[in-house]
Image 1 (spheres, rainbow, N blue to C red):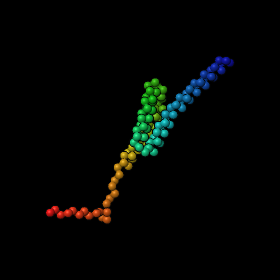
Image 2: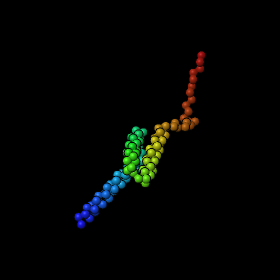
Image 3: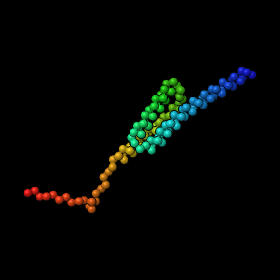
Image 4: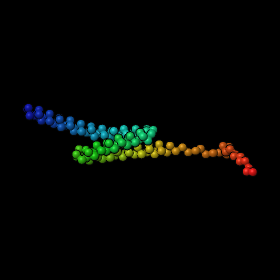
Length: 122
């Protein structure tokens, strides 16, 4: 009976460990989704640069997990999809901010034109 209790405890510990691992993997995905949402509201290129650095750090950590064989194929696919979404959001917002930085001059109408009088050369 004692061995049965130890067996149940070991099974619970292994299950808890897997659940904790799953939560850590989901946390990286949630962080990338948060980065994408933040990028869509960014007001400066500097904010986007910071988000790009955050993405780069998450990629570094994920590469280390892959090297240790800590990620399965489904986790890699999910990470790839969310990574593309975050990078796309940053790129799209950067384009919007760049476009907004170029302010076109309003078209002049005939009433806006002021005649220029040049003195005749003597």
